[in-house]
Each structure stands twice: as structure tokens, then as C-alpha cells.
Image 1 (cartoon, one colour):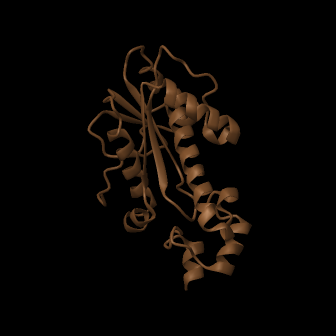
Image 2: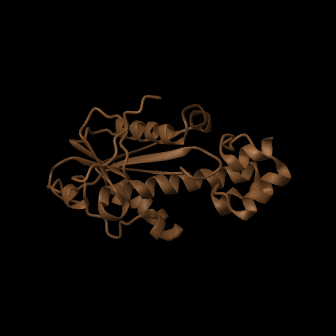
Amino acid sequence: MRSSKYSKADPATTPQAALMWDIPGLLVAGVDEAGRGPLAGPVVAAAVILDDLQPIKGLADSKKLTALRREKLFDEIRAKALCCSIAQASVEEIEHLNILHATMLAMRRAVEGLRLKPKLVLVDGNRLPVLNVRAEAIVQGDALVPAISAASILAKVTRDRWCTEYDLQFPQYGFSKHKGYGTAEHLAALQLHGACPQHRRLFRPVAEVLR
């Protein structure tokens, strides 16, 4: 997994190029992740193949939606998509591989977990995991490609639910509020309580507390 086989999007990989694959009946999977930036918890990835016969209204970049709207769309995507898969890379894997490689690992797991094999995988961003199927990187794909938008919602809701559940075990950190990001509240809690088992110890704010 340490090999750098992750390619950057080339100039031909544009939203317009992606739309060339918007063909009815073609199995296209959208892939996105949530949790690269936080100081704690796993990075989560999702892959979604939408059903042309069951369109889902309101798909958008998960960051642009309210938490309530994401939750409703999460259930609708799970009910209407041809298939979807959610995977993650653990804190231990993040620390062993680094966050980029761990994210690519989670994305690969999500694609490999699909019940149906897609003909094309469209990945948000400018990096691609190593896959055994054709893949294209789409910069800002979560706002441009419905299948990627759906994947971003599944990944975001899953990651947020993890934070809410973990908050019950370690309420002193406020995970349910900041979702693991390095807010002033989170950094203050780190200074006061030290790191918990799910903090990413190689991330600078956590590492500084452990010195």
C-alpha cells in the first residue's frame, strides 16, 4: 500500500468529460470520502451506483446540506441505489500508511464491496485508488456528479454517526459537536485530558499534546 500508484487527474478529466459517461444503463460508481482532516477516528469512504429508474432529488455535496437533509438522503440512497458500499480505514491504518494512503485504501474497499461491478468509477478529487476497473478523478465531483454526491452523503453521515457514538464513550472531547476537527473546543479538551484511543497521534495537534 505504500507504493505511489495514485494518479492525479489530467486536463482531460473534466466535468464535461465525466458527463460523456452519463449514459442510461451504464454502471457508473461514484466514490467519495469523509474524515481526512479530523484529528480522530477513521476515514470513511462510500461507493454508489445509482438507479436511472429511481432518481433521487436534491443530491449535492454533503457539506452543502444540513445534517437533517443528509440523514433523509442517506436512507433514500440506501433504498433506491442499485447498490452501495461503505468502508473505512482505521486510526491504526492511518498512522501506519499516512492519511492519503489510508483514504485510498478506504475508497478501494468501498468499490470492492459493491454487489455489482461498475464499468467506470468516478472519484471525487484529483487522486485515484488502485482499482481493477477504469476510473476517472473529478475535481469537485461531489458537486457535479450525482453518484459522487450520493457517495459523499453516505460517507459523511456514517462518519458523523461514528462521532456521535464515540462521544458517548469520551464525552469530555465533544466529538458529537466538532466531529473530530481541530476546533478551539477540541484543542482545549486535548490539552486538558490528553489523547484518547481514537486520536490520530501523528497529526500535529495530537502529537504536540503527547510530547
